[in-house]
Image 1 (spheres, rainbow, N blue to C red):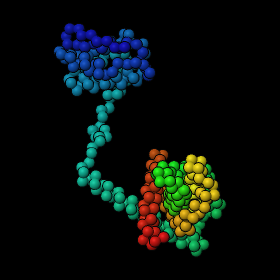
Image 2 (tube, rainbow, N blue to C red):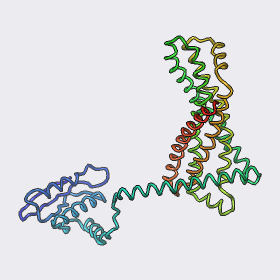
Image 3 (spheres, helix red, strand yellow):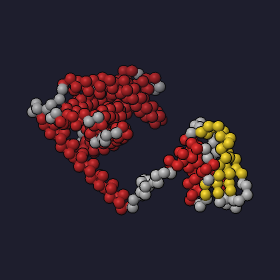
Image 4 (spheres, rainbow, N blue to C red):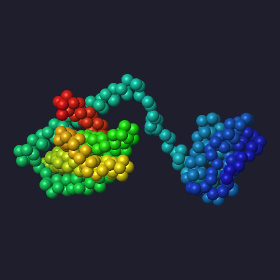
Length: 372
């Protein structure tokens, strides 16, 4: 594809051969650079294109690299030896010089500037979140007064989407969590002959916290991300701006139905997840630990208190409001690009899961203080 000759007079002749098109096996520029750096360094570079059978922009790019390198090192390039078509394209390429400052250079700002930008970004995010919370509270107030503007049909569709259609994944995860809790607990309790207390471990753990937490994480990744993507896409296509122009508050029309739907559906999904988790523990207890069906059932009923059930349902309702609010907030904050929609979706899931963990810790501490 390429050969080098060094005739007398300090010239380097580069012989280009073959078909220079996409998909071919071309020599790297480093091969030419090695020839240009050999001692004695050539003063002129010429080209022999007699063996060239075809070319396109691949050859033009290769020649531009050679010419740029030669110009930087004071080596003269004889373009007259190139075919007229190639010489004409190179002439066009170098007809307009690059404007100074046009090339974007990556400059790392100082540490103090980066710190200031991070603090300013945190301040802006906090202000937007507080503004969103205030608008959501006002929208809830309008709902209680019967003045909220949204379609009931839209609310029913969202309830169906985040309720009934979420049952398969909630069932699978809840049963597996119950199986894991029972299996891990059985390894320790069997050392003391207390396998029957697997029912207590699974029942209390699932009903009080794990059912609500796992349901919240599932809905954060499933429904919270969907809310962020939907509203982010509407922000990109300027549908939200159109609603504002028509005098329809986006908070009432878009955010409020989603918050109501998750607030209503999360406790029901949590209750369903509780029973499915207990079923997973029951499968392990009966099949692996040889516990009696009625014995496991009565032990579970005796272990679970009504307070455990109410704490789990309360946590799930809080998670529902947090997931819906965070998903809608990230969607409304989305910029007008496809990449921004993906970033908003990712941020919604991560923020919702962090909020679930913080809310779980807060509620657990409060329940411990109140003795619930």
